[in-house]
Length: 199
Image 1 (cartoon, rainbow, N blue to C red):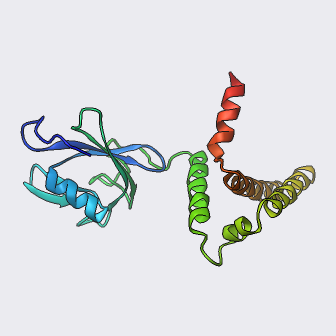
Image 2 (cartoon, helix red, strand yellow):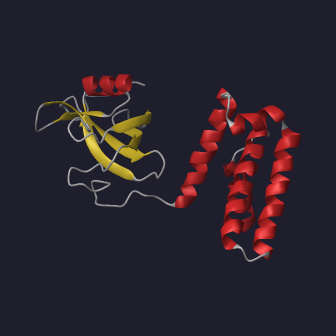
Image 3 (cartoon, rainbow, N blue to C red):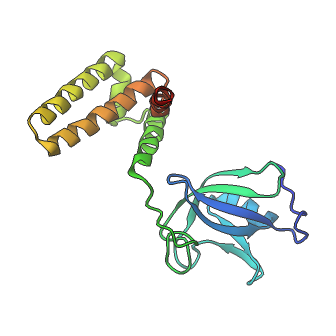
């Protein structure tokens, strides 16, 4: 990644900070080359403070760090987009974002987080993990679990047991994502299929 620090004339570039899960823009700061290199090395966002005229790691006093997930440069090589997992509120005024927005996000976005987690389980296959156990047993065991959870979801619905219906429905969705992952797909592939039908 080649960054042009000269466009603004002061050796600084804007860094847009975005939540990696909710996709909300959290804040805007500025970085010089040293701040960028420190951010890259330590995986915690460090800015160049124009008022203090020094490097400033977000959270160095409050503990509300911005843990880096990814960094990308724009098409003109002069603006960074940094996706983060924030620890606590981002704004010095105590709000989630510097625009006073709530950053809790939509619950539906958790499905992508769960998909990423299951992908990681498949890549790493840690011992003692139930998901690892399913991947090890293969498609027969995974499809069996999908079928079992589907039946239990139907039973909960037919019995008007909403608590059990939602619990088993969540189990069904989890096992379906495991099956998708085992087959080389993601939950987004189902969303894409549904979106195509919706046209």
